[in-house]
Length: 383
Image 1 (tube, rainbow, N blue to C red):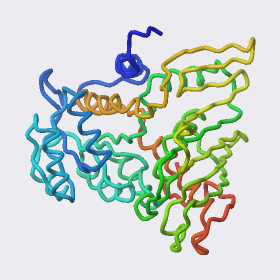
Image 2 (cartoon, rainbow, N blue to C red):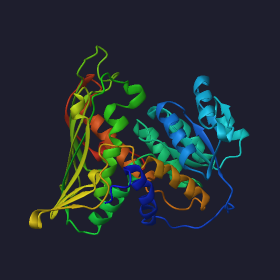
Image 3 (cartoon, rainbow, N blue to C red):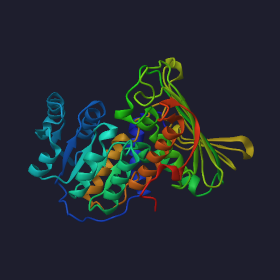
């Protein structure tokens, strides 16, 4: 790969090719060439404000009509970020839907507050983009799934690696059988962050973050879900309220898929900066795929192939492309299933809930490892 291009330039240029893998569909609403997609934005906190800036800078076919947040100061941040579009500000998203003419709505509320916003948005017929995880409780995940499956608009979830060209190309090779059958998957996401959040907000540190990686491994397995999970967790600075209130800081989890394949994963905080790192390795009969670094390793001849972009620790790659694809999908009719959709998001989120259930005993308010089966989640939306 030429050194003349930055990693982000490569991703944006390659996104056209990546989209070609999945893009079909035709114009439904019939947007004229110069008409912008009219968008509402809910949630202007850290993640929401960053992506709003990304949308304004890199999605020329989008116009931010309105921004909504419970905190007035955040509304002002959103209005300033999108000042080019002169958006209106709201503290009530239902009022925003009543007053504004919108094509789509993007949602960046706290994880536990996804379903209470996503479901009404989908029920109202809007195209919807919402951050991962789908939610933090099984009944609310099911509520989103039911709403999305019957919705007139599309539902896209923010697992951006589904739009990263090296992941898209790598999974295509994997599913075409170049590396043979998947046998084992290994990954980690390690951070130097200190402190911990609350379970009420995040559903656990694993649930809040690891859905990116559970999504990758379910993708590698052809969108299958695991049948079993065992997990153990730990809190580096224990608090008297225990794991029913505070998130874990360390966890080690293993999932087993229907034919015995294993996904082994560690999720850690409180590390020295040297160890901040992300790994997604997929071992197969004929070699190993490392999509995060755009590499493929073959057993035959001990060959190494750089087939795509090395992310070099930039876990945000693919974010701009997912926003662009959401806008493009709306503009071309909203009929194309997003790479990251209700079914992929459902499996990724439920794997996180599985891990949480496997490493916390809520009755004892203690970290206690146990085996949890998929059926133990009690989902009402299994196909």
